[in-house]
Structure formats: structure tokens, C-alpha cells
Image (spheres, rainbow, N blue to C red):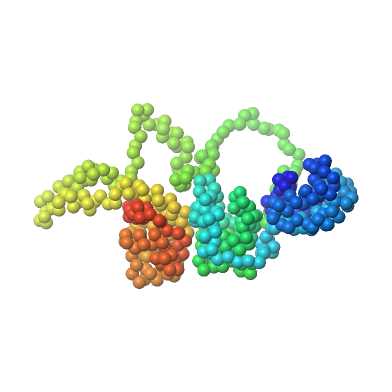
Length: 441
């Protein structure tokens, strides 16, 4: 019964959609019950699902004795008018101006704790998404691309939608179990992940209307009834149709098929080009091995050969040639296996940071060349005041400082905007440092 009631009320149920439940169609499902028991069953099921108090027994009994509603156009004259308590149980929507919000508040760091406990298993610690679950953070500046990343920060126009959806439908499998304060805190944390508020922000029913979403001006009223409906309301054309349909392009080429977990594929790397490359390659050709860590030598033997060649190139010079071992040590760079391990660890960071060719600032700065760089100096990124001050005081990201920061960012640098809780393993810290060191400027 309760599932049927849920089907009648869409996810956007509010006062308007609740009115569609003005007549409870319980007669179709519990016809064998006497009228008082039938109404009590419906009211109890509704109250259980919404965790709202059930109507008083005397109120239900009185409603049960009332005559069924008269038949009307499009109706069957079944059921009864919904009680105010029943309407209130469904009327939980929030309007863009904040109307409908309960009294409460929550800050960013409380929101992080609740989010990690109740939301991160699907959406990731930083809204980066796990598997095919929705990404909640990042995507700024992508809406004009052919493959936009639509998140709370890049796309959603109203904060009320965020609050309402978290309150109404989350956590998955335990909807409407969050208190208003927890919903305020989670919403504040999501705003922080998208660089809309600072880390000391507290969201409440009083401060709600002060938050303006970045894409608030990206929407316009729906004018399709005036501009399009008339064009499709006339008599359908049934002449001049094609004799046959030809497929001219595939979804992979249009880039609407979701990419892999490894990241966004280049536009040129489409299914057609892959097929053409496969057809052009000889049948007995061996697949090429991927370069590791910027084409660094992948084995000691390769490094030794490179070292001997470097040593030979300086023969005859006035200065004494350096030993081959020293040249190998200077040219080999980070251990390739450690770099590969660090690339896997970096997936925890990829929601906010980019590395490699064409890396751009996202919710965090791009990290090319970070090892040896003065803190807070990536051009075009808005750092926290604490990080800018630390850089001005001489903080340089070397192995030691990176290890301390990555282990516990907020303890290492008070006031940082970095919301990452930290890496718990020294091995992971060493690996990701090697990976970052392998990235060029």
C-alpha cells in the first residue's frame, strides 16, 4: 500500500502534487476491510513511511464515517478527502527562496564527517563519485564542451534543489533518515567542495538565501508552449518519407557514451578511429607497450645502457668524467614501479587536481612540477590565505613537507581549504610523491 502511495507522489511532491492524493484510492486494494479499519490501515502506512505522527484515532474514525466524495469529471467517486496530517506528511518540498525550510544549521566540517559516513561510499570523499554513481563536485567551465560535467557547482541553479534532494532521497536505501541539522551540514560541505563557500561557513535557514549558485543565470523560463508546441500540434506530415534509414554516426563518436573510470578520453579517440587503426595494423603485429612515467627507463639494464652512453659522451673533456653509476642515479628519476603505484593512489586526488599535458586548475590547482615549487604559486588558482602566507614565508613542497601535508592537511597547515582527510599509509605517501615528481612543469 505504501509503495503505491509513493508511486502516486513524484519526487518533487509538494503542496501542488499532494493535491493529486486528495482522494485515497484504498478501496481498490483493501476492499475486504470494513471502512474504519481500511482508513486506519492507509493512515498508519503513510505515517510509517514518512515518519510523521499518525492522525489521531478519533480523527481517522470521523473521516471513515464520511460519505465518499461525489463523482466528478475524470474521477470515480472513490475514497475521501485527505486529512491535513496526511497532506503535511508529503508537503516537504523547499522553494528556491528557502520557503519550507525547517529551523536548523550545520557547518562545513560537521558536514564532512556526516558525508564521509553516509554518502562517500557512493559519491566519494570529495564528491568525485565512485563507479557510476553521480559526481557532485567539480566540472566548472565544462558546460560549453560537448561532454559537460554537470555537478552541484557547475550546473545546478538553486541551492533549494540540493537541500530538498538530500533531505528527501538520501542516503540511498535509508531516505529521510537525516535530521535537518545533518542536511544543512552536508549541503554546506557540498558547497565547500565546489568552492562556493569557505571552510568556516555555516548554513542555516537564516543564511540559506544568501548563497547564490554559480549557474543561477544559466537557466531561463520554459517557453516551449509558445515557441514549439504550435509547430508540433498540427496534422502530421505523411508524405515524402525516406524509403530506408541509414546509420550515419555512432554514440561513441558523438561522445555521449560514458567514459571509463580511468578518465575522460580524448575527442579524437573515437570508436571509428580505433577500428581504422586496427584495420591498418598488420595481423601479426605485437601491441606496443605503454610508456611508463614519461618514458623513463623501466629496467636497471636500460638505465645502465643510458648511463654508459652518457659517460662516453664526455670522453676527452678537460673535466674528469663522472662514474657511470652516478650518471645512472642522476638520470633514472623516481622508481618506475613507485611511480606506477603513485598513479593509482592519485585517483583519490583526481576529483580536484589534474596532472600531465594540458592540466588545468579545478577545485584544486594543477600539480605539474609541484615537487620543489614554492607553495601557493600556481597561476590563476585562488588559494586559502593560510597557504599563500605559508608560501610567502618560504614553504617549499619537498619530500618532507609533502609527506607532512598529505598525512594530515588541516593539522599540517591550519586554515587550508584542502578538505582531504589525509593518506594513512607511508607507502602511499611515498608512491604519490614519486608520481608527482615524475610530472613535468
